[in-house]
Image (cartoon, rainbow, N blue to C red):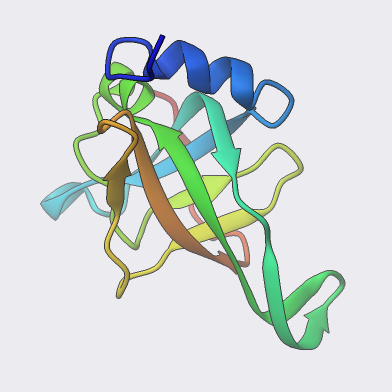
Length: 132
């Protein structure tokens, strides 16, 4: 059976079964609510290889630590997030914070079932997180 829009999600789950993880998306509010950060849980996300360049500045953080997060579109729709901007943060399962790059487009690939978000590793923000 060829891969198509109808079977892409199940194929992706089986292909990357050992690499999928649950992450938290720290979504910043819009307009007057931009000081409010809400934590959402996203399931079956995948991270590409981490690239590190430059000197070490703190433990395992180098000057330029980057990766690409592959977020399922169905998960973003489930939590009601229409877009991701560079003020949002993605927290992986071991507590690393990733900030979407402002100058790189977010791509929708694999029949628009996944959003590919290029991220830079950052320090944790000093904000209060509210649950939806």
